[in-house]
Image (tube, rainbow, N blue to C red):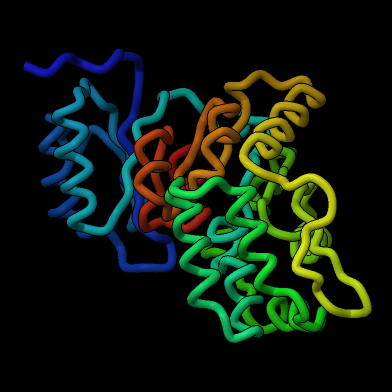
Length: 294
């Protein structure tokens, strides 16, 4: 018999993407049956269901994950009395987390070299290449590109991830501070900060001379260590405890930052990130945060 996970008053939350089909009741019932839960014990809407969780072990958790994946819904096991208002800071990555694209890949597309750059991006996100080295290699390929390409990417290709607006509005309503930390570029984080009312940002600066990208980054590279340090410094400056911080990310470069938070969420993430995160949003948008923490 597999050992039980540490027990506390906890809930099982099932949640489907808010912009997608509703959860089917008979499938929700089948999933809860795995956990020895009766449907009448919890509360349910079309896209979110919450049930008191009597017990959990690793084998059961694996079966639960498989059952949810089959229905393309997410699940979370959360402390029953933990509310979103209990947190004071939400930190997030930019590329493929707050927004749907990898900005550097789209910039590269303007240069006709997206496949080459995207391959390096993917390897870095899987943790196969050191991030600073991968960034230098990718940026070097952009040398000579007109700076107007950055504005074109912002205007034509940058889109917020589903649920981003709703999540940020709720955080603002609750007075929760926001931190955008990115291995991407200030051209984009500065604009998103102004547009979305984010509190703090940190990212890399592309060197531009004579209206052209030089293929170099100015100053120190914002890597995994820098992202984690920024979260820790922001958390401490706000007088918050680790357990009052949520961090969202999708790639290996986010793991150190996520380790500085009490709750980490792997957002449509690589396996290496899902394995280490508190929760995984494989299907839900960013507004899934309001599903798991009321």
